[in-house]
Length: 302
Image (cartoon, rainbow, N blue to C red; front, side):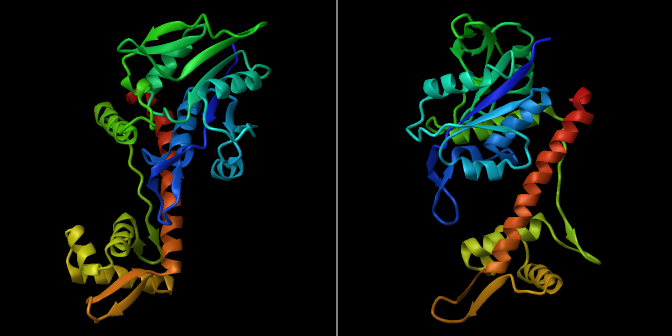
């Protein structure tokens, strides 16, 4: 039986137009996408197809990426060139590293995560190297079969697929927006799906997506009134939610300044910001894990 593994070409190219709260560029593998991150979404798709091992070709920023994927059971291949991303060079480096570990490899560029599971399944039915074709254009991921001479890169079978996601790159103009919209459309078309919501509780529930979003809006606008208005919530209700959270956790979530020419403002405290970051990280992991279990238990109903 042909052993099939995968390699993700994880370029550390920054998305300069997209920055985090500290105005730092967000790097491509860890960009938030579809309830998880770009690279974790690709890993989940490969796991669903029972592909193993999964190799990640990473460059000089690999330590941060290793930490991000610490519980994903992938194998890192180190690419210390630290030069401008070059897909052909990284492809050849990845194929060379994968050759001794498998008979066939699925190659996934990290910037192209929108391919469907059905496309992946279709490519794997072929016993030769494959390239997905949509609208007469070659896309990704691609499979390469190893022979005594190396990977068969010139004899690939062109496989027509009904999946425009194979052509979508996050690095293209408007690529992020197009990819997000495409994935959203696919979810609505597929119908059956699961939703995961994390609620923190003691004797009563006190922290969930609603209050988390309220606190984020307050930090963004500097105003409880503006945040409540954005959420179509009364000012008094928003205060009750915040007071409840602070009472349960025993520390303030907001820095409040009253009066003054600007009318006062509110921002997150350091403890409040850390709490929200932890909540968001846990929620993201729970959505990913729940989706994996959903795919296992409800695959036949999708």
